[in-house]
Length: 539
Image (cartoon, rainbow, N blue to C red):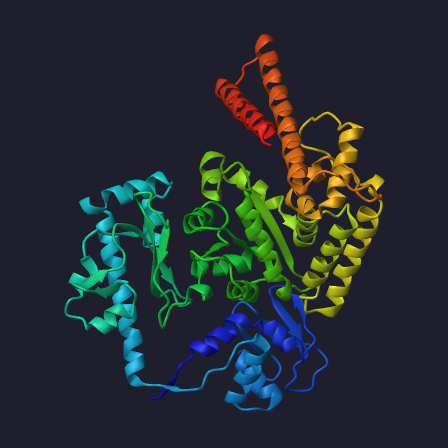
């Protein structure tokens, strides 16, 4: 029997929401787990037309019509299969390939692919519990994995030898290399994964289509993944999604973390709805797949600058997928930790507190704009306005877009244009800046706006208003920057001295204090004073 290549139609089903497509023609309301409306295929006054987003099908209990996103488009538009997927491809913003029949050879190749990857996984699993994989097993167990978890996720070990290429030596080399497990070099076939802790990657049908290997010797990159193949595409694959799919439906949300181990630990410690991108930055394809399952997402990133940047990127990517019922939030794990560490050291309750305190998207975007631009200057506000406008324009629901725009207009009026109501509270206790220094800093900012952008975070922490006009400074740009850096160093040194004084006072009062912290402060004081002296000596 002739079969059609369904990889493209699968992609359409992943990228497009069945509810979104049907609601273009049928007003839908959510009741329980499904959406309901009046059937478009027969006349009725009482809604009996049910849409199940999670399972990807619709069913009318009145006339019996049943199908998926493609059949609905065909029937509702009275068009054929090719015309339907062309229309859906336009909606999804992807190019429609030429429709080709899948040959018997292609079918056999795909079956062989799955057989090879599944057998390789079994080999890796066995090796993990043998002498060769002893260090890998010790590593994964030290990360908090028990035997049950190792078995569930089919974790294994790829040895330093060419185990896979040797085992499949009777398999045609082109079939073996098609899986990405083996490559061919000057001296013949060799294993791509060597001395790696192996995490199998599953497709939606729970078949193994690729692997992610983690280094065990501290070498970089930390993870390497199977290169893209006919059955595996990193940009369209979410790690742990096959395990989390039902949990996402039950929890009415997904949680996105940064790494495979974090995702597995979260899934096994109270957050089964957790997934992770696969060794790549989050992509629009990942967002589309998640939103098709559920538009409520909590992005959980590290609290460092890299995590903040990743969150901003995720925020801008998710905007086109927002609906008025969406609940997108951002959580951050601080202190140089990740979810795995939090769960091990502080337990599920601490991690739940982090998730529960996640920042709603509308607040996160507003905060990031205020941190990224000097909104207490006219130029900074202009830049911030343009950025916000660009972000809001990505929201496709015009009514919802207008609501978000109105909310930000209110915030801009109340916070950007009423400065007395918005005072920055520094995290540390620093003496006020004297008036002469304030005037000099103002003149530098107005003379050299590029310096203002470069040292924006520090200048904003001074709680100085730059709105009023001021004279330009006679200092050169080099000396102006030298002044800003030296002043920043002086304030940092003052903070360190205050911290040290407080520690010593605690010690005199009989309180415990951290000796390592005191030594660290002394070290930073010495380094900072040396930098200041060097800076002041520069001509």
